[in-house]
Length: 134
Image 1 (cartoon, one colour):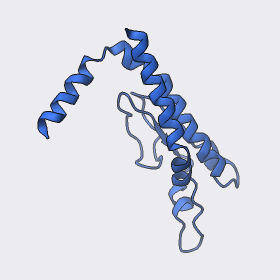
Image 2: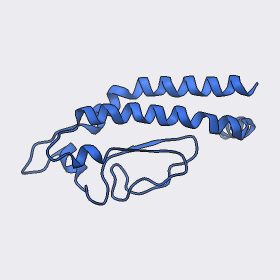
Image 3: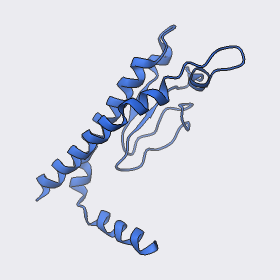
Image 4: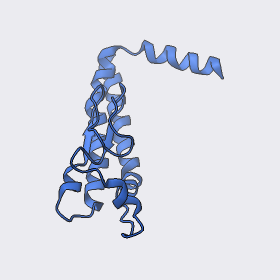
C-alpha cells in the first residue's frame, strides 16, 4: 500500500502549479452549490444562522467557532463549507437538537443533497484545467 501512496504523490507533484490553481474556481463553485443547499434548508429565525454559512477557499482560514471543526486553514485543492462564526456559536445545537429543542437538521442533509452535483462541477473543472495545460 505504501507504493500506491508514493505513486499517487509523485503523480500529484507532476501536475503543474498552474493547473492546480486553475481548479480553484471549480472548487469554489462546488462549495457554493453545497452552501446554497444548506442555506435552503437552514431554519430562519433572525437570519444570523443563514448568514453564517461560508465557503472558504484553498489556503484561507475558516471562521472562528465555525462548525464542523472550528477555525482551520483549508489545504490546497480543497474548499470548506462551514456554518457559524464568533457571533453564531450554536449551529450544532440547531442541527442535532438539545433536551429543550428538537433537532432541525440542515447542514448534513444539504451536504448529502448537493454532494454529487458539486463533485461533478469539480471534476469538470479538473478536466478543463488539464486539457488547457496541454
